[in-house]
Image (tube, rainbow, N blue to C red; front, side, top):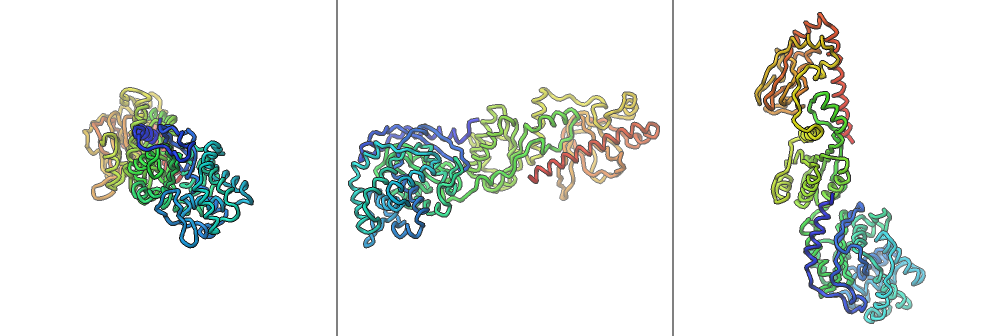
Length: 609
């Protein structure tokens, strides 16, 4: 199954591929050669999955997107206090190449403008410029999760035309921000900007920051966790230069752009986003990149100030139909068939606040189980809030599964109004055409019924002989005939009560021939808790044979029902003359009770897992 978020990215790519605004950077001659039609979008999750559309693997250069990564490495090498003494963290409100130095101290305003980035590069750990470069190259490669190379043509082009940056470097030396000859450090700055990446790399770099400094690709730490907030903070306030305020207002994620056409955006704890499109606006930011990030943020409510979620906590448990069967009492044949195939049903229990990233994780887990599962039940009774974007993703997964002959149904939709409304109003065509059950047991029963129908197409035949009932298994033909002579057939109308809980003047044992009944336990105020559903081949009331004279539950006909009825008193009288019949029946009851106990233990174990 192609995942819903993949469809979304492909549609988003097609939508913004028509946006032709902006021009490629020309102040660096080599960048002027970029193809303005290049366009890729990637989203990487904090558990290492990447969605990609368009030119996801076309290489281009990092440019200024290297700045927060090198700043993180310098923080790790020098410490926060030492870095703050040399480079500030205040937004400059100026263009990226402005000479923004604090009056008197000469300290750059922040590490995201060129002056601050050059100072940071000069302050990176290393005995000499070459050692510093090796540290920078390793650090940025760790963020990407793979070794990165340098575009030497772009590096030479930047070095040969970087006169303004050379002036900045000497000014930093003049104010004592850097020491010694500033030119080797400046060359390292040019080289870090010329490192080659792909849009996919950008998404994983962003996801590494979203994941507390640990790369989701390989699990390796790229940045100490203590420094991640500092890097994200300067990205938030300064990463988009003199567009930073508008970006934060409209998109609401820490981000960094580069004049090579890339934008990386971070949703802490959840996602990393990478966009590549080299046509820039007048501020040096990718036109398509800004438009795409704005659209993603709006569509899925990803503004960083809109709340925080941990997607891995959304899934409470996943159990199979074999671990948690319904309470439907079935014939021996049906029970055996379900025991063999019930693992084709999965109950996925969700909890807490479910946002886009949580729903995305759920959909991916479902996709991973798709080959071995025919029916999915989403149990939502623990869900306190369902984002519209999450409901949309779940509905899209439902329709994709249906197209491949699989089913996704909902159970125990929470009483919270926004959960119900999100499911109702954010499905395909804003309709509510989906299956929802009041309990996961009813949902499991529906899935089992569908599974049985799929295994044996056509309506299952009604029971028509005593040996179809487990209560009389093992009896000979002659013994069955003795029992058959005591049986009468009764019919009940839909909604009719067969007997009430607490009744003690009814000695009937029932064998269901056709129809469906519910066994209900009164819980007060006229309400009932459903214990089980009975269909053809099931029996009830047989506890009378163990001496229980009072009915422990009520039984109602859910449809028109036909039953064979046997008097317990008459059967006990028969047993006086033929004790072997009663011994076999009691043995069958004990076996059935043992099986029910094992099933109950399995359910308890599944709930506790």
